[in-house]
Amino acid sequence: MSIKGALALLIHGGTDNWSPQRWKGRFEDVCGDRRVILLPAGGFEPAEVHYAAVWKPVPGELAGFPNLKVIFNLGAGVDAVIADPTLPEVPLVRVAVDDLTGRMTEYVVLHVLMHHRQELYLRQSQREKRWAPKFQWPASAISVGIMGLGTLGTEAAQVVRRIGFQVLGWSRTPRQVDGVTCLHGSRQFDSFLARTDILVCLLPLTPETRGTLNRDVFAKLNRNSPLGAPVLINAGRGGLQNEADILACLDDGTLGAVSLDVFGKEPLPADSRFWTHPNVVLTPHNAADTDPDAISRYVAEQIAGFEAGVGLENVVDRSRGY
Ligand code: NDP
Ligand code: OXD
Image 1: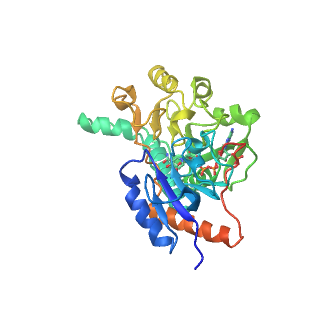
Image 2: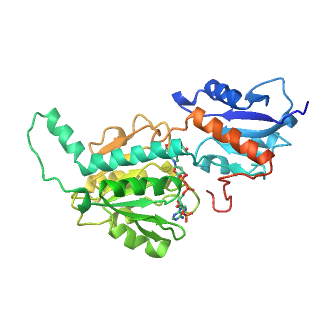
Image 3: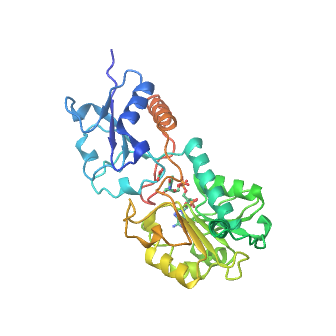
């Protein structure tokens, strides 16, 4: 009988739906006779591990497997993995599956509509028992600018467009998406911002994108927005945003409201002003959860393809950082 290289699971820093045992069970269901080792564990040889499926692995942890062939990140964003200077030089595969993409689109649609339909104002009116309708613009009067036109940004852009918004997208290299005004690179960034009422950030966190969401950028958004002031929605990574700038810009009206799913420090500390600011809608980094069923199948299929010589999909370009 041929011995298949084992799959090691290294899962740290997850929340409720990141139960390592649940992931192990799902991987065992789809891995046939391949051994699935949930770390930390005893009774195995590091040399028998050929594949690692990871979420926020501890730096240095992956270097302990001398025969590693592929690393599978259990999410779309690989910033936490790439940060490890000892990361073995094997292909690093990220998640790009319909299940996760659909969840992110739900988040983007929910928050774009929430701000467009003045939900913060309406819920406050309800709490105060105030019957005070405000003028409601049609979606066609509002432009949504999506930073990042990759797997997630492209799908969100198409769905938001179908609802009737004007949609712009911004990426590093030129992209084409039907019905979406696509701009790219630093030279077209200001033009993208000037035409944007609701800024949605779905960028990866890389050395180039870190800190992109700052006061200079917010000040360049459409100052004549029908919404009164521009809105920021960030579901990329906390490291993309300057949090002091966001709070200051909310306070002085440079931004009208924000929806944030990600933060520089997670969980968000109890004393953060984001918890209580009236114009902040926050969620605990669950815009698009990775589903153990969908992702374990995706990993098992990729391993099967890799072993059959077909190759891997969604391999990260380490020099770009995503
Ligand atoms: P992709 O790699 O498919 O797309 C990334 C996009 O960002 C591409 O369009 C890319 O440009 C663009 N981009 C990268 N660097 C720059 C730059 N310097 N300037 C302009 N554009 C840039 O990633 P996904 O769409 O799959 O995911 C995006 C991010 O979403 C993840 O990295 C992760 O951080 C976050 N995420 C958050 C989740 C949550 O629950 N909050 C869940 C899942 C993901 P180009 O097209 O030219 O390559
Ligand atoms: C991801 C995430 O990157 O959930 O997939 O943040």
